[in-house]
Length: 120
Image (cartoon, rainbow, N blue to C red; front, side, top):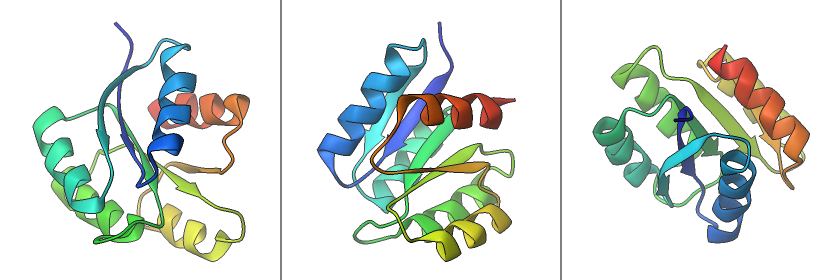
């Protein structure tokens, strides 16, 4: 049984890409959320080992969700997913507790490197 991951992105295509990379490398995607509130609800229900969290989402953006998850579980392991050119946001995310970040379009090697690093 692989480590359990919650994938959060408002784009179904991006969730599918990440899920594919993670599952074929032995991780178990236990949930998918398409907005920030759903992410928080699913986290408290599933308590996954890791969350991949998109920065730009409707309702609650990734930074808001990151901060709320860190309050909910200060040991939460979260990797931020960003489009190019969001470096300033990424720095804030790391300072707020994110373990790492991956840039879209996702590259398998980078996703796995960040995932393994975050899980220690």
